[in-house]
Image 1: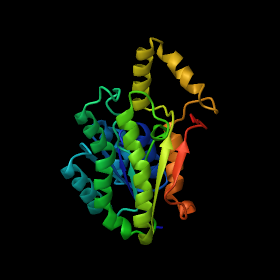
Image 2: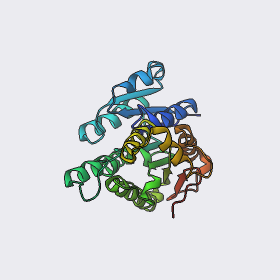
Image 3: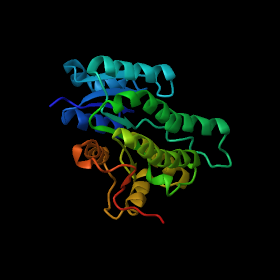
Image 4: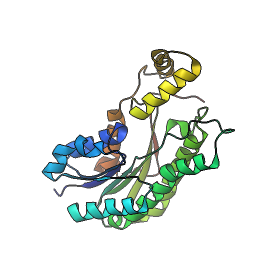
Length: 255
């Protein structure tokens, strides 16, 4: 079988790295993108083998997005799967203190760049026999957290945008779904926990324990938990699933 071709943004660490690693182990050819220069070292073996290409830069850059798509097409000849994972955790401010520039910056990374990259990839997805788009949403789109209004709003937009994509791209046989991770042990989450612990004047382990107590499964998730779900959404087994938001949160329900 011809190898499927994927593009994964925010692939240097956390969920993005786990997703890219899972897809590569499943036989995909993968275009990788991240602003962190450690991206190349993380996937050195796959880059050397010719199973991946990597572009380092900021996803909000129009030139960077164009170069990513161009390099994937030049190397592999198409795109079957787009995983819009790159994201900002937001300004970490209350809505009262949130500046409009803070809001614009978060939306630029988390929403505008998703639309822009998807648009660039769309002609190649339309040509695929098994086209998939997976967007990274969040538990906190539906259950907002204090000092996270810009992030929560951006992920709410992603959930709505995913449904709009499913409606518009369905006639081209492109499925579009979102995953909504909860408490996943990633560098972004670890930084948030440290910030929350400081704000509450508790130690970091106490804050982790507080979070785990809210999860019916009693543990944090791993990036690989998210990667496994995305691998299923990318597979033929999910061919009739589109417009869905799949929670990956251990059963958390704040409502």
